[in-house]
Amino acid sequence: MTDQIEIIVEKAILYTDEILATRTAHWRIARVGLIKMVANIEKAAPDHRALQTLRRFIADNDALYGNDDVRH
Image (cartoon, rainbow, N blue to C red; front, side):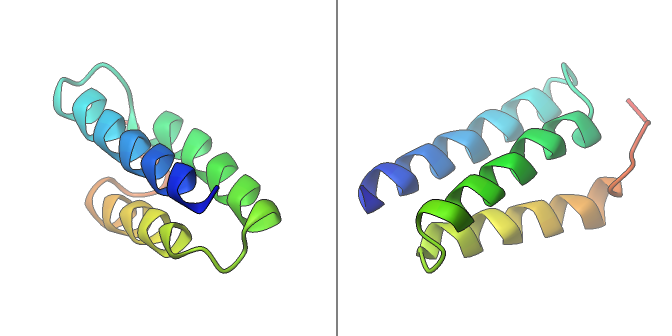
């Protein structure tokens, strides 16, 4: 199962990068889904290394866009 978590997180990050680059979604909307993903992983596998990757991605984008970005 841990490999599946890594694959899902990697795909979520790639997809989020894509929608932000093409401006088809706001960061704050994408962030909501990623935060839900963090919560689900914390329940299922709280020590999984992909959790840190996802948290870092969220933090990096918060620094770039803000956690309440409405610019587009």
